[in-house]
Amino acid sequence: MTLESSLHLLTPDQLSSLAHLQISVPELCKTAHYAEIYGHHLLPDQKCPGRYSEKARDVILLKVLESENYDATKAGDKLLTVLRWRKDYKPMDEDRDLPVLDGHVTTVAATNLPQTTLWHRSSATHIPNSIYIRWKVGLIEQAISTLDFSSPDNSSKLTCVEDFNHNMYDEVLWKQLSTLREFYPGIFDKTFFVNVPLSLRIGLRFFNKSNPVYNRRNSVILGKGKELKKHLGNWVPREYGGEGPGLEIQGRNVRGYSAYEHHALRHVLTTSPTQYSHAKGDAYRDSYGPPDDDDVPPYYH
Image (cartoon, rainbow, N blue to C red):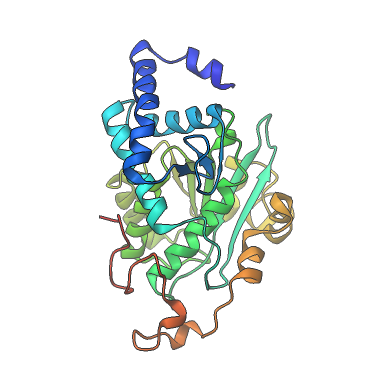
């Protein structure tokens, strides 16, 4: 569906909210001293990473509005929060020492629209939460760079797979990771939690219900990874019930490398994660994240 077609489906009140937010954009960017979101400018000729197109800007504004039920005032506050976070946290900055972890981005044309899926399969057992979150942000940004922002349909949204066969459940970390999604309004379509042990399913369902970024519409909990085929299609790898090649191979179809290889080549730890301590943690320090592992990252309140 094109942007024009989507606009025709909006109510007069929703169109009014969009117009109000469009008018507010210059002042919001001036207040934040920043104008980039998802790699796109919200204003032309801004000296920050990204590019400008009016269509992409309106698609992004619609995503923010949708996340706030088309309340223009709340959407403006959300956009300002996201701009400030991106300015301070610098999610597109790749010049960092990050761990080599198991994350992948795949893009397939399962239907008439391309579907971009983010696969999160790493455990943060021996890594400070701030570093793990920084790595997850890099994975999300890599996935977003493949999206098409010429339309607000699923081609500009991500599907996410959280594999518990490869991932240890940590309630504090999961709360921080879920809060991270608040800085990506309108980006995540559906999240599949796969290979979830029976002992964790009840707790995970309760956590999802109590968390505003998850709900029954956009989160699915699966006990077995092979059940994923029923939801995403036959293209998924064999370990998830499909007939597709492994993630290491499919990930190369995105930009010539998987997100896993991207970080493996550009970000290598100089110290073993098990050797981390607050006294000897300089190799893990995140200049734009929280100063200590136990601290809450900026804007994670």
